[in-house]
Amino acid sequence: MSQPSWFDQNPAWFWCSFVPVLGGGAIAYAGVKASTNVWIGIGAGFVAAAIIFAPISETLAGLIWMAQIATAFALKPQYLAKIYPKELPLPEDPKLFAAIAANRPKIDFNSCSKNELVNVLGLPIVYANDIDSLRSEGHIFTSLEELHDILEIPNATLKKIESMVVFSYDYRQEASYSWKRVNSMTTDDLIAMGMESPVAIAIVEERQRRGEFKSVMDIKKRTGIPFSAYRQLT
Image (cartoon, rainbow, N blue to C red; front, side, top):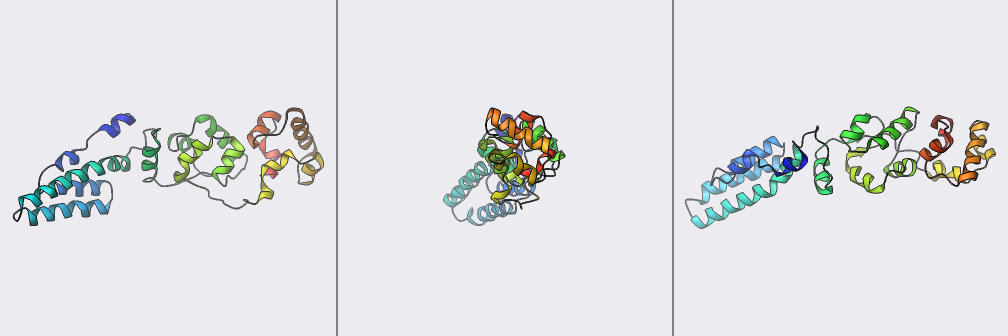
C-alpha cells in the first residue's frame, strides 16, 4: 500500500464509531490496537455518557454522539500514524513524518544498519554509504550538527530525522576536537598530533591548491586518503 492510500483509508473502527451510544466502544478498540490508554478511556467515557444521558435528554444524547464522531475524525490520522507499517518508506510530508517518528523507538546512529539509515530514517543511499564508510573506519558520530559538518548532509534532512535518532557517544563536543582545525593547521601541527608525515603533507598541499575543506568526507574525496589515516581530527 502506498503512502497516500495508507493515510486516505478509513479503518473499520472509524465507521463503527458513528453508531449512537455504542460507537464509543470503537474508539476504545482503536486505543487497544494503537496501545493508547487515553483513547480507551475516551471511548469508554462516550459509551457511559450515552447510556446515562440518552434516557434523560435527546439533546444531550445528540451532542454526545456528535462529539463522538468528531473525536473519531480527530483520532484517525493519529491512529494511522501509530500503526504505519515499517516496510513502507516514510512520507515526505513533515507533519506525517513527525507523527510516525514519535511512535517508533529511537535509532542509535552509531550502531544501526545501513538498511535502517535508508529504509527507517529515509536517508538517501549516498549519505548512508558515506556514513557507513566512516563508521567502518572507526568514527563515532556525536550529533546531527556533526553529520552536517562532516558529510554535508542538508540541515533540512537532519531536522526531519532529529526526533528519531540518538547517539551512543556524546563526548568530544569541545571545540578543540573540531575537524575544521585542519584548515588552519600546518604540516608540523598535523604530524605533532600523530598523523603520518606523507598524510599531513598531502592534506596541506591539497588545501593550498584547491582551498579549504568543506567536511571530513571532502578531505577523503579530494585526497583519496582513508579516514583512518587522519581520524585524529575528529
